[in-house]
Length: 107
Image (cartoon, rainbow, N blue to C red; front, side):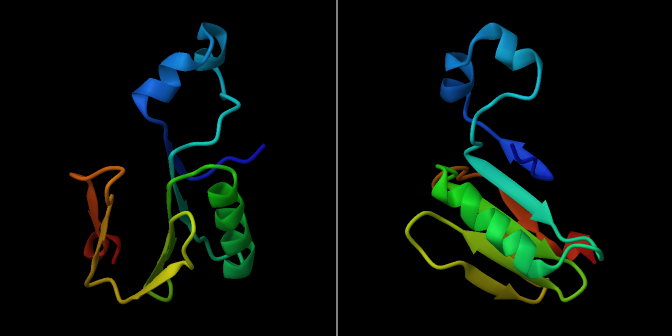
């Protein structure tokens, strides 16, 4: 079992879970995850973790490296997109079309 820094599950999938699973840590792969690299986390370890999320059904993942001002966007069937510099915004894409993260807010 893994626990990302942030996870989101669509309501349709959430409602399919048994009631008792909704009151604790649910055994379900999220649709969207975010990992924020801390000084003690090697980026390679988090990249492996992000690939595992995507391989298990996650539709969108963001790995954010504040120290180096980098972000990696993970989607199924694609190599991670590497974003250099916090002058960019990350988009929720088709999964979360009205959601974006302004990386400048992390500086």
